[in-house]
Image (cartoon, rainbow, N blue to C red):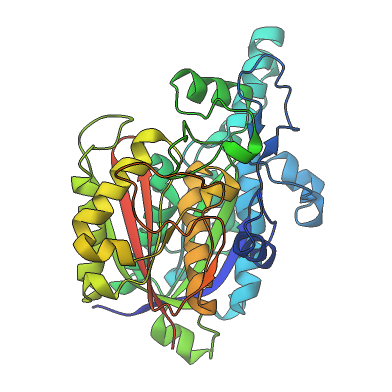
Length: 411
C-alpha cells in the first residue's frame, strides 16, 4: 500500500511567537528572538543569551495540577498539539483511534526537572526525590501525554536523533501513513533545555556562540559565525492520508512527498566535511517524490551558525543540485529563533509549509559577509516573494544523523 500524505494542522511555540500565525509573521519580517536569558541565573555562565519562549502563560492551556506533573518540554508539546488539532478541524471523536498515532520526540528531554532533582538529591537526600521525576524526564513523555489526551491508540513513539529529531519524527510518521498503518498522525518535536548544565555542557565543547551580542550571535552562513545559540519550543503537525482528509473535507495545507534519512557514520559531533550522507538524504527525498532536483524551489537549511555545519551543509547542497544550487534560495530560521535542538526540524517544517502556502521565503537575518565556499543565495536579511512549488527542510544532528523532508504546495 502506498498512499499520499498531507498536512492539515500545525501548531508552534517558539522564541518569535507562541502560535503559528505569530511565529510566521515574525519570521517573514526577520524578527530577532534572541536576547539575554531571563529564566535562569547566568552570573557564572560564559554564555548569557538564548532564544527563550516569551510571555507564554502555561496556565491558559494546562491546569495547574497537570502542568506541575510535566516538564517544560512536554508542556510546549501539548500546547502546540492543541493548536495543531484546532487548526486541522479534526473531530477527535470521529477518528478511528486504532488508526490514530503519535510520533513526537525531543533531543534531550526533561533537563529542567533533571537539574532540580539532582539538586534535591545532593542537598536533601534520596527520600526527597519526586515520585514524578522519571515520568517527567523521559523523552517519550511528550508523545505519551499527547496520545493520552487525544486517545490515540496506534503507534506512539519518539525518534531521538539529536537536532534531527523533529524532522525524523515527521518523516517516520509520513511513512507510517503512506504504508497504511495509520490514517492520522500527530508528529513533531519539542525541547526546553535552557538550563545551566545544558549551556555549560554545550559551551565547554565549544558548540555555542560565545559572542553575547544578540544581534551578532546566530548568524548562519556569515564568515563571523562561531557557534549556535540555544533555543526552545515545539512544532507539531497533524498529518493524514489524502483520502482521510478529503473524506472529511479538511483544509489541506501542504503535501509531504519525500523523506530521506541517513547517517554520516563519521564522528559523534562533527558532520562529514564532504557532506556525502547529508546530500544522500536530500537525494533520497527527491527520488521518493519522483521529481528532478532543479524542481526544488526553496531549501530551509539546518544552518546552525557553526563553522562546520554551515560549510559542510553548503557542500552537501552543491553535491545534490550542482550548478542549479546557486539558483535555489536557502534560508535559516535559526538566525531568528536560535537552535531549538529536537524541536528545530519541526518548527522549520512549519516554515516550509507556510512558505509554500504564501509564496514567501523568510530571510536569514544577521548576514553581513560571506566566505569563499559560502557563495549560495542565503536570502540575506530581507525575505522575498517567490513562486514556490517544492521545498526541502534539512536537519543534521550530533551522531551524524541527517534528515530531509520534501514538501509540495497543495493545489
